[in-house]
Length: 178
Image (cartoon, rainbow, N blue to C red; front, side):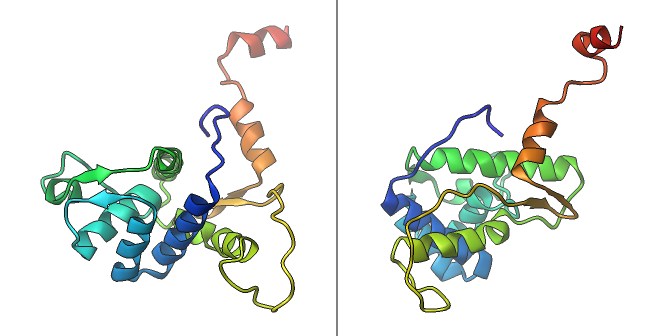
């Protein structure tokens, strides 16, 4: 999504982000606010409603934080500390939100899509118990899966192929037809 940029979060941030994703998925304002704080995001206000609105705007595609809106949570409470590593997560959420909006998809939640992965991360990192109670193996990289945007579903390979396609009017595609 961002021209090959990637970031491996340190384990404490990975665990905190996984917990935030799960709280966003569940929707409890007090717990979302606490999870946002555990991620290292510090705001001038401790109001759970404002912090929850910020969390949805930054870390779930259902939210929106418009700094120019007079009712923006950013106008009600400034963010005094934001961990630099989480900027990459915020950027991905913004890109996914833009893609969903561009395709007219209104029912997409990145937190809901990521919730199973967040649970698995917590289990594998020893911050939860597996549902079956069995032993946990080492964390395995995710090599397959499906990104769902509303009624659309594409595998990572399909997303990559789509991103690599040239526009129809591109001169390179014209010359290959001659």
